Length: 291
Ligand SMILES: C[C@@](CO)(OP(=O)(O)O)[C@H](O)COP(=O)(O)OP(=O)(O)OC[C@H]1O[C@@H](n2ccc(N)nc2=O)[C@H](O)[C@@H]1O
Ligand SMILES: Nc1ncnc2c1ncn2[C@@H]1O[C@H](COP(=O)(O)OP(=O)(O)O)[C@@H](O)[C@H]1O
Image (cartoon, rainbow, N blue to C red; front, top):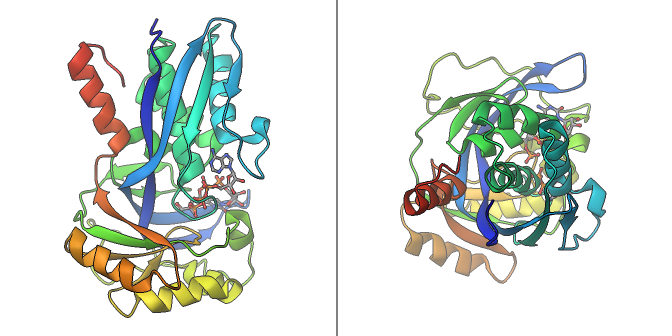
């Protein structure tokens, strides 16, 4: 068992396109979406406890301890594996909540991968992804750690290799509820499935954009402002807006020009998540398999 704290990143994702094909009987929506990670995210620290307790030491505004996806992920893994060890978890949270960049799902996935290692469970990625899907439709892609075309409710993943540009991500100061957008009567739900891959050019729209910009004027404003410099799009159900640039300097320049009116950040797109890169580095250093 490892006694030193394990520090792992918990990256954000973007949906480079998002089409809604229909609604299932259980209310969930059939999607086609292209996920890519950002080299930008939270940092999580895990310390094993012998007494079986699971404690998240960082407080989240508006999210009670037991509802936090980090705690839920740890508890489900502990219950399903029969592990008697516990964990203390600390997080430096920089990802906005309800931003469409998957912070909660990413935190859950980092927890599953971190605890699988620290508790010595030896679960496969398939097992962890299946557990993760119970916690949220976006958790499996973070468990797998590779950019992917996703179908179903987001769980059928095929690896993809989109370009890895630098992005400006604008963060309107509103939290968008995914459930609110998916239950909206005016949401487009009849996009035709894309049958070829990689996704052909001209298919990069996000079907949630019309409803989200109608409900949240701040999101529309961010879309219009970034749209003056590059193609600007919504990620997931928002609120964040992103646009691609060929290099960091160009992205920085645009963020700087918008800084009076909007907050945001610059980050590189990545097809292998920084969590998985860190786990691979740790494996090389210690000769232990981390994932
Ligand atoms: C839309 C996407 C695109 O990546 O991202 P976000 O905007 O949330 O980041 C995801 O599909 C979101 O995944 P996630 O945030 O894990 O959603 P969940 O917790 O599973 O679901 C929240 C709610 O959204 C609705 N929902 C979610 C996914 C889906 N394919 N169809 C749905 O109808 C359901 O009403 C569900 O109760
Ligand atoms: N660890 C967590 N980090 C962020 N949000 C969490 C977490 N646990 C639970 N939540 C809840 O999940 C909601 C969605 O969060 P998040 O995944 O960050 O946004 P999105 O799904 O829009 O990308 C939050 O508003 C919050 O209520």
